[in-house]
Image (cartoon, rainbow, N blue to C red; front, side, top):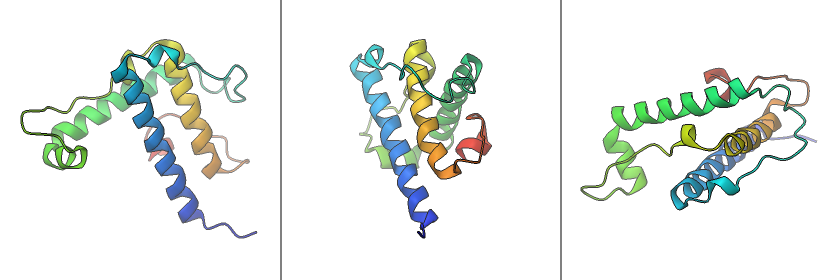
Length: 129
């Protein structure tokens, strides 16, 4: 079977952004504490608490840098009205179990495009870039 990896990766990228939007909506609606990790995630030994916290902290910093550096672009893309200000979602302020659930789901999606023989730590630009 031939797989068009460019299309497959684009699909995973779309799913990643949809998931992050869904999590941001849960934060905004105050329902984020309902997000719980799967009880038996197979890569839990790789996703240490430090990696989970690091991803959440660093992604917030990245998003802040983006909206600070390119406000016009992000305001247009988000449909921000005059007088509104873009803020980061607050991934770093989520409850620990919700952070774990979010990052484990991201990890699961991204492992699909890495293949079964690739062992990747889900942290840093080389993972998400």
